Length: 340
Image (cartoon, rainbow, N blue to C red; front, side, top):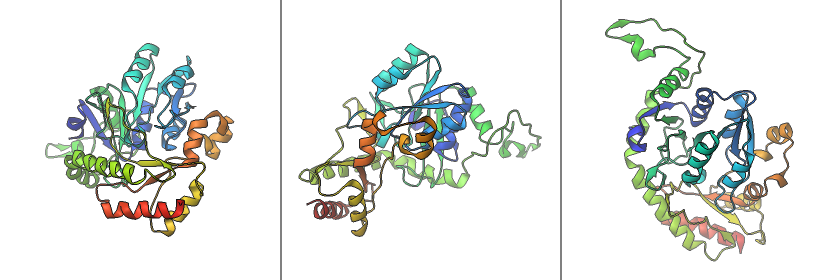
């Protein structure tokens, strides 16, 4: 069902998007001595998958406004050791797939798309995931489609899909459905050491009933998005930049940037909203600001000025198809009270 929706030949559901990224490292042959370009502004799972493969995540700063990986800086960071680029379609906003495809073909690097936020997003009429790259999706509880926890990896290559399926279940040559069938018991063999990354049937059942409603939900998110833009126009916050006209935005996260001259810092505002019973989030604290990556690679905030500023000044407001206009009024009323 997911393969049909995205428009790809193969899809394998797994236990999380992180599992999908980790399996991608294995099937792409990425390991010690290799470099993978990763956005500085992303959830740490993106960089962690590279670390677990024994490779080196090379962080790249963000574009101003969108927060997406800066592809000019990414191109400049390519070295003979660069094995892959991992673009993240942050907040559901597609990265420029034309430019990414050119980088892939010109430099001979792999593209592994982290589309945790971007199921349903499109670039020039094609779904994210349908550009010939391994693409990982998330169905975590906060995502546009949720199986509470879960993920998927899509590919056009049936051999890659078969290997992903094996690796997600210990490396067994046969899964339980093949071993315990009416045709009689069959022994399995371990053809390579794998993981326990399979999605459960119960999780999949939740997704089966949500996926047909995804486009309707994205349309509702777009309506709420536009209403936020209007309601916030007079407050000292910057609303998200418009979507690229070549794209359809999945509208996963509505992030606002606090004006540096506002009477409260971002963190003070977060705490104030909690006292008004408004739930918010930060997406994200840049990878370079986490102690492990900061200390291991000797990273400084000044090396990634855009990602650092976004890390310090943005917050995400409540957004889902279940958010009502009255809910939005409560959110904006609380922001107005705190910021003015």
